[in-house]
Picture 1 (cartoon, helix red, strand yellow):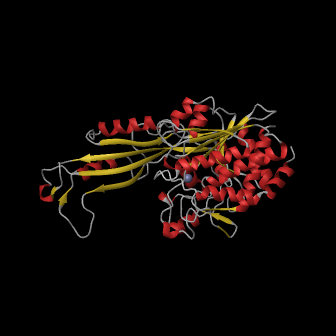
Picture 2 (cartoon, rainbow, N blue to C red):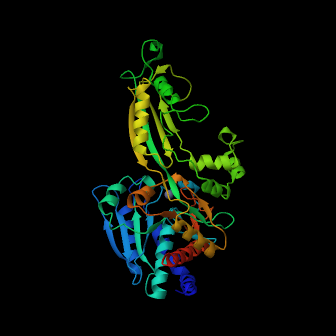
Picture 3 (tube, rainbow, N blue to C red):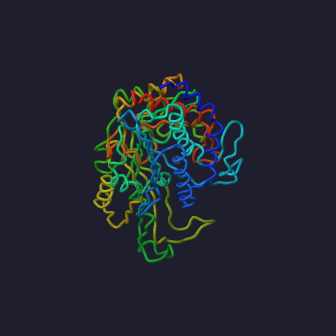
Length: 451
Ligand SMILES: [Zn+2]
């Protein structure tokens, strides 16, 4: 396959590719509010059909539609699957945007809009890479599958049953995950895994209604009960105290530590931006990175009870609520951690607390020495002219485990984004240059995967 011809096609069609991305950005698809979901799914399906993929939209009983597309290669049995999502984060706060969040405004060589980078830019870049291969060679070097869901930004709560029900359809030899890009020095990033997350709510109750705080000697105070319960979960040295919490944690291998050393970590910039003198426990360098990427966490997301308004109010609240999340690392399991949490609090006299499980995804990673990881890194280096930066795992979460663990193939995350893309924030954008380079990278990757 002549990659030069494919690259030339991509260059010659840049304006059309940008136009398609703008069209997709203009279609709101906010899963948190259920806004524009069906319309966006149909638009994605149409874009797939336009380049020659056969498609299917999965409307399950629960959850937003999943758009699936595929095309078979005439000469290869290998299959590469792309996981993407068409839903986006809410655009708020609206007043911070330079242009309307769903305008797809092009300015300064960038396409602005919610989803421009996460994840519509990546999705369109992959579709266009496939289009370029088809137009130039009349075939795809390997079988291609696209799995594009509509609930990634709300934790993919309905994905598991679909994956399990249609597991044969979603089988592949490897998958490319949704996100990635280059760093400030133009080096391509590879992410080999994701942390899991378990979100829980703890509720303590007391009297049937708020009472005068003069009653404190005889009426139980749920705010205190919740504080005491939370105090049992973690000590001041940041150790999580739930029994056997660390039981299945895999510590990073020496190869992974080596990778961490190669990761640019902008410590000083981050501290400055957050107006912090130091990180937690004064961590820095490799220790901070190791903690960030390889350690599980227990975080209080919020705590509400009683009166916190102006001045004072001598009241004894009737309930207290805390929300927490646990970020999990391989090989922890969210159900197991939830069970351990419930048992631990019960054994320490807090069986009266209501403990609600909200959402969860499992941690996963593809081993650093997997041949697919090597192939992606090699192609990235070839296309970008710089050695790839490999993250053994990312600090974020997502449903990657369903593909990696359940469907059982290697998964690597790479993409066409850049450090100033403002994903999830106002003024999200994608540089047209990054978009086009990323499209070439995916085309090259599909070609190399056939070899
Ligand atoms: Zn996102």
